[in-house]
Image (cartoon, rainbow, N blue to C red; front, side, top):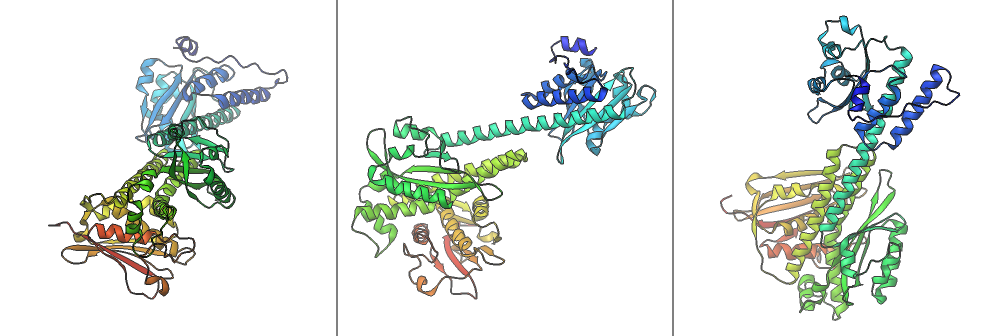
Length: 555
């Protein structure tokens, strides 16, 4: 089948190149062809048809009869994705190649261009396929972007002379252009899939999810915002403040501008106007997303409805239970503030991990990263967001004193599931995990135990900021026949003596800027799960927190 016949059967056809008047020499004509091909590839929207278009453009000037475009398949071999000048039967015969098989397979394996001549008189089995296609000259070039192999692109002649050095250089340049265009299309497709995946996740969550550009200009809100407010709203940087309670607007605006100016995470509990006209309490948070250079590329935020917890009957008494003795405030506003601090403390890390994972996926996509690593980052983001939802539900259960429902759990699996969150806490710290298999299976609330571990690991990571050779050690070992002991240790500065006496009371923090509610929540959670929590006696350096949890009977 000739090239013209196959095009008539439905292949894309490019108009013959209309060369400028000045293109009088062969070299000038080829430069003009390269410019025309580059322009078309820049706007190409389909990887297969763009190669047909390029072939239609350069085929006649270079006396080409055939092309084969192979792409690297998932199994590591090559798959024929576009071709011209051969019969359908030959296309089926050459549809799949192993690396090293035939000319194109060898080019892909060695990543070195090949120029085959004397094909019709050769007995080399590597040339059998192109010999059967009637070719007398064939040039194949690896399609690469950096060190990453995409496939191969080969061009052949029937009855024509060998390719000249200039022609080979031209075809290799064309192949490089096609590879860059294919990579652009792959990245655009992956980015679109990533954005669609993010929006799918964001639209399934019960929280309001939003994002802004580095200057605070809102560029996305999920549908929860519009369902909650009942308004279309605006995407102006300051448009969201109109939905805030008038008494909260000034503080919210000041805190948001402080975060934009400093890069510090945003966190504020405030009242947001519901579509019913009522103002409901929400917890607003935002985390900066940074690129490899540490520059903020966007902000990811959320608003979580906490109104029922704030307004629940007996909230003041429940706040006393959560905060323990001595710190109860007589005013309702203090109870709200204390409870909101606890909620913010528990939700901050999972949401920060989600934002960082989404940022990592976006950065990898823009840098041509591995799609599997992009997918893994998005899965980690989804897991972190769902963990935030689980934590919020367990906090509600804790505050409203709902019945406790312990279940069998594996501490090793639970610790493994926290790996993405731990990586975001202190990437410089070495994490050592020692688990006694005989103490692995326990009984308790998995989400609540995750909360405790996350709090203790977060405190350890914070204590190690700026320390040389930071190490966090997690141990799981038998306490006795009935309980397992879990320890989280660091080699930081340790806990100051004045803090130790009131360590598990709320608002008693040894870290600058800390809320001092994390260990109070840990104590409540562990006691509800039938265990105890304590700080071991001072060691030469660092601190070691331990808690117990009932072992599974028969384990």
